[in-house]
Image (cartoon, rainbow over all chains, first blue to last red; front, side, top):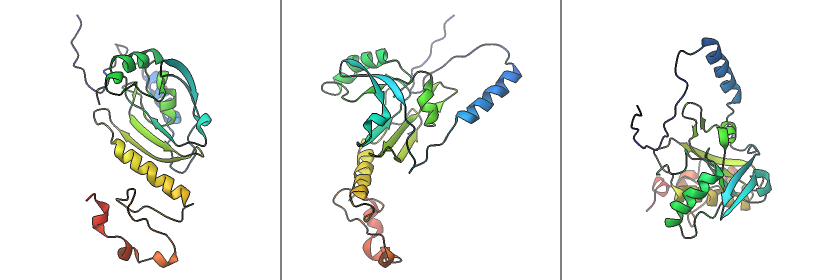
Length: 83
Length: 133
């Protein structure tokens, strides 16, 4: 039966149930290591494109289109996450 | 930017944020499905599948001047973010001739780094200047 979950700022997530395959786990950890890159102050911000919503319209944004302007790029855990 | 779709962004803006801010959020609310961008910026939590509260100040040359990353339950200080942007703008306008000491905010004294300032900061800056009055 469904279990009640308290609403917090960190979103609860699920995952596959059952025994983990050891090989796969190792592989995954390696991938994560490769993908993790540290942002350095004084270095270029990695460029990206992303779809989004702005003032009643769906838009596509490219970071490098904002060259010449100051940009505040903010990440957050999810819409409706309280704080 | 969050992992939510632009559809959810629209509903959050219309159902809640417009009630806090007149006219709703003016800037783009970006969607990062799968956390691809968040991974590159080092703010994507693989286990939770969501992004931390990361905030990056990017200058007109596309260079990251500063960042801050918080776990989900603590909100940001927008005044501090603006203060940092104003400080970076001042440094940029003076082409690095002026620097902003600890506690600086607009209207407060800046320092002019150079050979004559070496060992003389104590004459120009006191610890009480690190705090708001």
